[in-house]
Image (cartoon, rainbow over all chains, first blue to last red; front, side, top):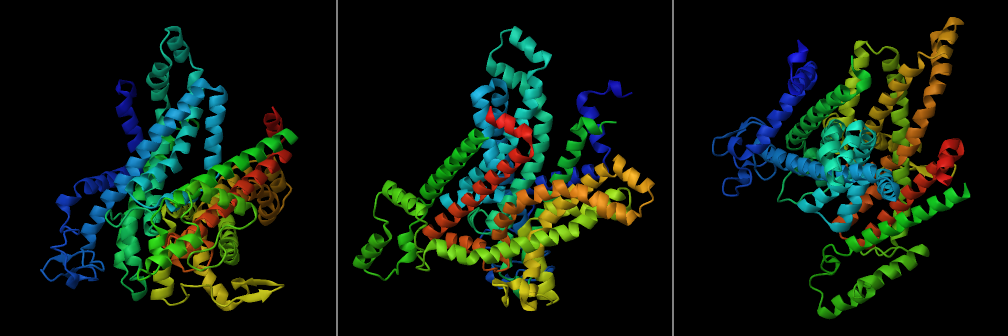
Amino acid sequence: MSNEKTGLSKFWSEFTENKIALISLLIFLFIVFVAIFAPIISPTDPYDLSKVSIMDSRLPPLSENFAGQTFLLGSDGAGRDMLSAIFYGLRVSLGVGVMSGIFALIIGTFFGISAAFFGGKYETFIMRVVDIQLSFPSILMALIILAAFGKGVEKTIIALVLVQWAYYARTARATALVERSKEYVEAAHCLALGNKKIMFKHILPNCMPPLIVVGTLQTAHAISLEATLSFLGLGLPITEPSLGLLIGNGFEYMHTGDFWISIFPGVALLITIVSINLVGDHLRDMFNPRLKR
Amino acid sequence: MTAFLLKRSTQSLLVLFIMSLLVFSGVNLVGDPVEMLINPEADQEDVERVIRELGLDRPITEQYWFFLVNAFKGDLGTSFVFGEPALKLIIQRMPATLELAFFSLFISIIFALPLGIYAGLKPESKISKLIMAGSILGFSMPTFWVGIIFIMIFAVHLGWLPSTGRGEIGTFMGIHSSLFTLDGLSHIFLPALNLALFKLSSIVRLTRAGTREIIHQDYIKFARAKGLSENRVINTHLLKNILIPIVTVVGLEFGSLIAFSTVTETIFAWPGMGKLIIDSIYNLDRPVIVAYLMIIVFFFVFLNLIVDILYTILDPRVRIQGSK
C-alpha cells in the first residue's frame, strides 16, 4: 500500500501519526495566520493614536471601554486593547524570529557545506570559529553585540543571525561530510560539473532534513531570545512592539496586581515557542534513523 | 602537549583581542554620552571640560590604545555615572551574582537528580511522562516570563516571599552572603529558582538518558542478582556512574548561568553584575559596559581553556590530535 505513495505524502502520513505534533503544527499555522492578518482581524488598531484613549488604561479582562467595545483580555497602561496588541506583537516576534532564522540558515549552510567540500585549512578555520562561538552562551553573544552596537530592528536581527549561524554551519558540515563520500557526488565529479553545482545542486538537497530540524528548534530559540532582549530594553525599539516589549511594559504594573498586561502576551509567546519546539522534536525523531521501526 | 598548550593559549589571546576591538569600537559608536551625562543647563565651557576629562575628544584609535594599555594594568576606566573605577564596581557586585548562580546550581541538581532517575527507572509511568512534559515546558518558557509569574504568584498574590533585593547579609567564616540569614534566604529563593529552571530541565533529561543507559549494564544486573536492595543499587552503583557526564556538563554550563543571571537579576532587582550591566547600558555608561563585557569574555575564554586542558589530560585521543 505504502509503495504507491509519493515521498511527500509518505512523509505527511508519518508526521500525522503523532497527534501532539499534528496539533502543535495546527496551532503554529493558526499563529502564523494571526500574525499575517493581524491588521484585518484585530478588534482595534492598538497603534492608531486617534482611537486609543488613556481613559481606557489598565482595564481588567472582559471589561468594556468608553466607546462600548469589549476588551477580551483587558487593556494596557496606555489604554490599548491587549488582544489586538498581542496580534500585532506576534507579527513582529514571528517576523524577526523567522527572518533571522532564514538568514542564519543561508549563511551557516553556505559555510558548513563549503567547509566539508573543500576541507583543509579553510575547513579548520571555519570550524574553529564555530567552536569558539558555540563556547559562548547565546544570550551573552547577543548581549555583547547589542550592548556594543545599540538597539534596533536590523541590529537585533544581526545579533540573532550571528548567534545562530554556527549551529547551522556545524550541522551542515557534519551532514555534508557524509554526503561528500557518496557515489552520486563521485559521479557528479566524473561529469566534470563545477564545484558550485555539486555543492548546492547535489549535496545541499540531501543535507536538508537535519537542517530543517535545527531550523525549527533554532527559530523557537530566536523568538525566545528576541523576547528576552526586548524585555530587557536592548532588542527592538518601542516602534516595533514585539511580545517581549509588551511583557516588559506590563512588568511595571505587576506589583499593583494588574497581571493581564504581562501574562497574556507571555502566554502567546509560550504557545508559539512550545508548538514550534514540539513540531521540531517530532521531526528530529522522524529523521533519526536509529528510531526507525 | 606543550605545543597544544601554546597553540590554545595563543588562540585564547586572539579571541580576547578581537572581542576587545569589537566591544570597544561598538560601544563608542552608540549614542552620545556627552548628552547623557552632562547637565543640559551646563554652559559650553563646562561641557568641553567634561569631554576633556573623560578623554572623549581624542581620536578613537588613541582611545582604544589607552584602553588596551590600561586594561593590562587592571584599569578599565572610571564609570561616568558612579565616578568610581569600573573594575571596582563590577568586583563589588560579583559576589551577589556568584552566590545566585551557585545557589541555583544547587537547587537544580537537588531537584533534577531524583526526578531524572525516577523518569529513567520507570519510563512508562504517568509521573515520568509528566516529568518529561514538564522539562519540555521548562526548556521552552523564557526565563524572564517565568520570573514575572513567580513574582505575581509568590510575592504579589500570596505574599510569601519578597521579590526585590538581596535581604539581610550574614557573615560566616569571613564570607558575606545572603545564604547565612533567614531573611537573605527568603530573598534568594525566588530568583535562584527562576534561574535554575532551565538548567533543571536539561539535567533532568541528562539524568534520565544516563539512567536508562546504565540500568541495562551488567554490573547493575549483577548487583541486583547479588540481592542488594534497590536503594543500594541506585545510590551506589547507578548514581556514581551517571554523575560523571552530568558533572562535566554542569561544570561547562556554569558560565551560562552567569550569563542568564542578567535577566533574573534585572527582574528581581538583585544587586549583581548582571543588573549593573543592564543599568549601564540604559545610562550609556561606556566604561562599565566595556569593563563588564571584557571581564565576562575573559572569564569564558579562561573557562574554555581550562576545560580544554582538562580534557587533554583526561583523554589521550585529544592530545594526539592536538599535537599534530
